[in-house]
Image (cartoon, rainbow, N blue to C red; front, side, top):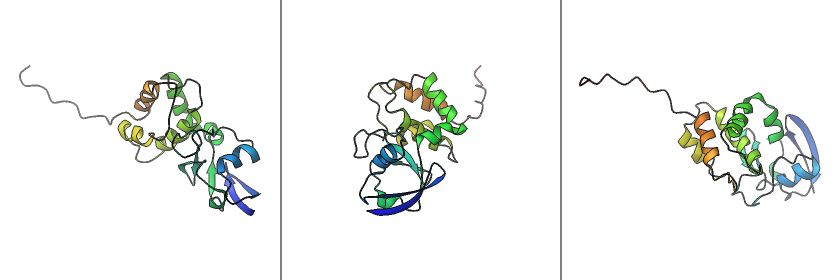
Length: 164
């Protein structure tokens, strides 16, 4: 057993737990934060995505001993942050939601991308979302949401065609 302290959704928390216990279990069982979902449990599906020190990380891969002094932000806090509203709206309006199991992980990752400077373009954002799997939507709606959130930079006006 280890005693650890870390920030959870902006609050300082203390916990005594086995060192090899996964963050996903800690969030769900000790803090009743169930937004991060158990999926593959090997870091491939993104259903358990959280921010660790402000960057996306799979909660299923993080052990208790890695949390000391760190900051963990879950989808519950991210969804309450106004910066996630455009992400949630784009997913809803573009058909990027179906059963909702992958949605928390998508919101966590897409909000991180949307708040970065410089913002990625849609192709780069899609590449960074590759670790978030969805078994329902066929990805079309998610792709449309990404394209809405990360449009290409405005191009310069085309020169007039002299043959016109």
